[in-house]
Length: 50
Ligand SMILES: [Zn+2]
Image (cartoon, rainbow, N blue to C red; front, side):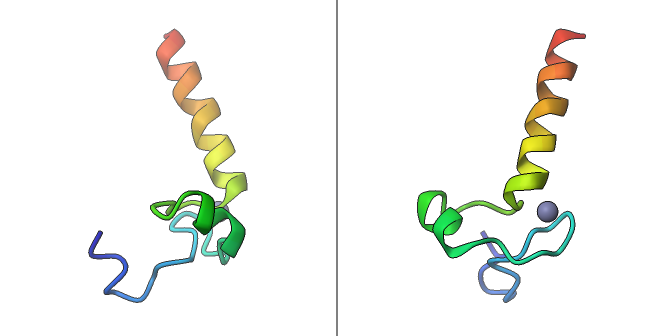
């Protein structure tokens, strides 16, 4: 969680968009915006099936 100290907290580490405050409140450790997180979860499900 050094990311908080680095001042990058609140920005998607994939696309750089600012993560909504509501999302951070729901999931304070989020490092991806909702769009990237959704894509990531889809990828993980696909990988799990393989
Ligand atoms: Zn993103």
